[in-house]
Amino acid sequence: MKILMVLAIVIMTISSLMMILVSAISKKTSTDREKSSPFECGFDPKNSSRLPFSLHFFLIAVIFLIFDVEIALLMPMILIMNMSNVTNYTIIIFLFLLILLIGLYHEWTAGALNWAI
Image (tube, rainbow, N blue to C red; front, side, top):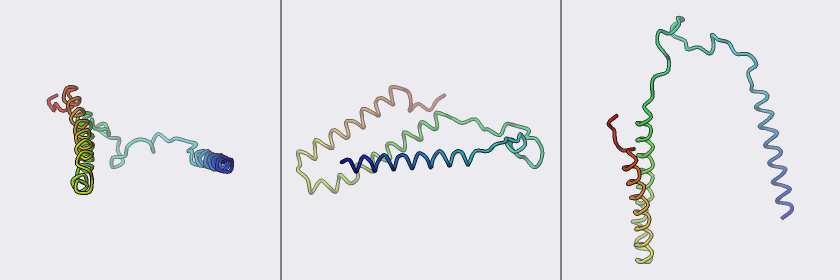
């Protein structure tokens, strides 16, 4: 057990030293206003280079990804149904779907699914 702890400390020390060394080497010492400004055919830009980002669209996209992953978790459960006990399978599926429905209800009541702004 002592060997594992000593090995872990040595690994953490080496990795910390490497991260500090890399961050010290990679720092830029000078910042140039021309290099940090956006480039538009050699002229100063007319408009802001940053476009407004819809936070609501981002939240809808994250919710979609979460439910997409949940569907990917549900699909193999159909194949497992033949190999498992019916009672255990029913309880597991019921709890999983209950958690999904509670999350959906929470998002609905919080107004995360309303697209009208």
